[in-house]
Length: 301
Image (cartoon, rainbow, N blue to C red; front, top):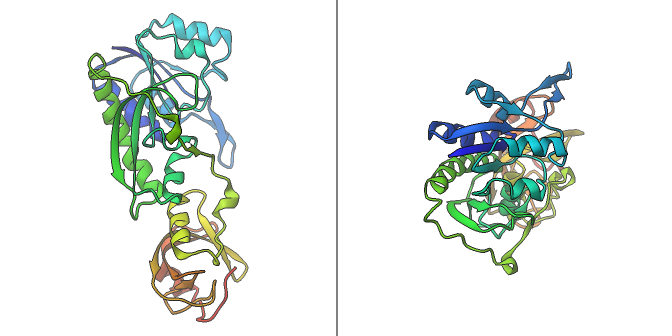
C-alpha cells in the first residue's frame, strides 16, 4: 500500500520500521521539526526523522499541518492511507479525510479507556491490571475513532518505561496486521460512556507524599519512572525513586524503619529498589546506601 507515515518520538520508530520491512511504499515521513537540545543547543532531528533518513525515505517537518501549503503537499503524494503514531500535532479534517482508505493511529491504551496524552501513566496510577494497544481509524475527536485491533498486556510490577517499550513493539506488529487485513476487519465503534481521559502529566504529581498509602506510592513510582521520576527529599537533596516494592510493616509516615531504607507510608511501607541522585546515574538501593547511609528513625519530606 502507498502510505504516508506521521510520527516523532522513539515510540513511533518500530512502526515505521515494521511498515518499511513489510514492503509498504512509504511516500513520505512527516515528523516534528528538529528541536534544540543539549548544552550547545544544537538542532537535533527527531528519532523518526533519523530513522527515515537511515531507511532512505523522504522526510517532511512542517511547523503545522494547518498550513495550506503543507496540506497541498500531503495530498499531492496521493497516498492510499496514512499511519499516525505520536506525531505531536492535532491534524485538521482535510488531512484526516485525505487518504481514501483513511488515517490509522497506534494508541497506547485499551480504548475507550484513557483517551489523551498520557495513557500509559494514567493506567498505572489508576491501578488497571491490563493495558495495551488499540489500532483505530482516526476522526476529528480526541482518540474517538472506530477500533480495528487490540492487544493486551498486564501492568503488574511494570514501570511506565517498561510498558512504553513493550507497547511500541506491540503497536508496530498490530499496525502491520491491521493494514494487511483492512478489507476484512470490522471496525468497532467506541462507547463514549466508558471513556476516560488521560491528562498530560504535571511534574507536580511526581512529589511523594508519605502520608498516602503505600499502594498509591508504589503506583506513583512506576507511573513516573523513568520520567519525570517520583521524588522525595533526604538531607536537603532531591532523590528520584524509580523502582520500589511494598512492605507490610507500619510506622509514622515518612520514617526510615530499617537499614534497607524501608519508609513508612500512611498505610504499610515502601522499600526502594532503584534510586537516582541529581546529576548521577540510576543506582540500586544497596549502592545508594553504601555511599549515603540513612539513619533508622530519620523522617523524610
